[in-house]
Length: 245
Length: 307
Ligand SMILES: Nc1ncnc2c1ncn2[C@@H]1O[C@H](COP(=O)(O)OP(=O)(O)OP(=O)(O)O)[C@@H](O)[C@H]1O
Ligand SMILES: [Mg+2]
Image 1 (cartoon, rainbow over the protein chains, first blue to last red):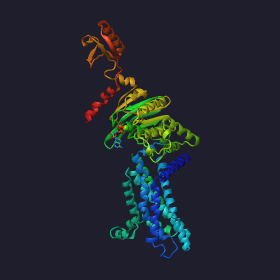
Image 2: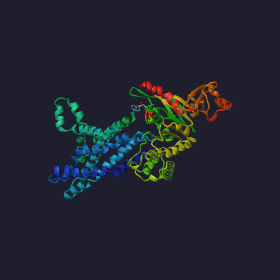
Image 3: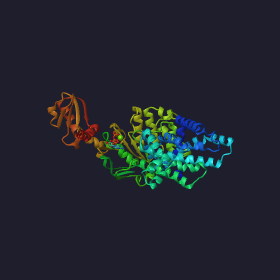
């Protein structure tokens, strides 16, 4: 057990350090902060809403992450495959799970850092009015799980190929499906030909619907379970893909 | 230490490794030879647990690689063919990372990195980023990684590839030295390395073992093994023909023995004949046989037929 944690930590540390030794991490942070800032304050009309909440901020997250999370995660395994270091890593005395978890957690932690750097938005809301800070906290938590779900999916697509571009496109497509599953124009379209049960099943995969509760300050176990199962399933699939050599 | 039983690996319809069995004990250095695409790397990848065999078993130090992979992997140091490493890390960072994954901490890790650096002559580039290293140094960095935990079993896929002649020499010496206390398997395309470092060699062709023996045994399979080369003024093929089959070379003659076991006798007989006839001897030598000739004879017909 102890040695498993040790291995996970070792892998995660290397991964995280490698982000910050390359300019990619900083470029990502800048783009993420500019983009969320722009969408919240300009397109989301944060000030004009006249309400002290971060809904204008969080509402964009499923879309911002749609591009940025696959961009960060696409190299996770594709690069190991391309460079041949996968062979090195998987012949070390660690299990594939430890490597998968280590790399995933490092990348998730990096996304958490990016998310934490948006704290000025929360401060602004507190200066201007009296927002429900519990809801803000729940929103951040939900956003973190949303990012985690996208990241786990990117992990899986990244393990399938040595080409980062393919990994990127595949994960964007899958994540887009998870957004659109509950998007009303799509569900309205589906109602015409699909049975209500099917529509409901598809809509149950909607990350937007599961994220909405968090934004209102409700931490529903069902939503948590949803995100954790997406993460769990995707990481499990990553393991299966990596083992099939 | 290493025991391989009827190992098979099939890629799609192709049998890359087709029923390979051998064992390597502590104190042995096994040279793994064979033409390109023979299945050397694939076999080594199965020993190290990177790819699962289609059928057959591998055990390392008594641990089955499929059933107790971590125990087996702990004993192995592995240099993959492409000598991969993380280009964004420094040599020191990379070796520390490898040591950490091997469960070495604190002092033990420091010592392990230090020893591996010394052994692979990396101290001059210790804090250089790996992507700025030359090919040979990258290769040595990955080799150092394989040695970091002083493993009992070493699997080295073309360890001297891309090294300069001095480094090739050093690495061969290193392999021979390590082989005294460990079980070493290394693949190579340089046949002199078999003589220089191996206690035993296996030639593999299209996934099957086609020869297995000590370097001397393999060389004895050569057609010229045991033949006597004679270079002397006045020598004549007719006189030599009394001793055995004669082949006229550029300026010398090669006499093949009638009976391979009595090689020393033939040299003596040729010398006596030269003395009787008054030939002026310039060179007289019993041939050991040549590995590259054996290698070609064993593997070439197949490669030609395949085309
Ligand atoms: N992942 C793979 N998928 C399909 N075929 C493969 C794969 N890996 C190896 N092969 C095939 O298996 C055969 C053996 O390859 P291998 O790399 O083991 O040869 P090798 O003896 O190491 O050759 P070389 O001397 O060129 O390194 C080759 O024909 C190769 O094309
Ligand atoms: Mg090879």
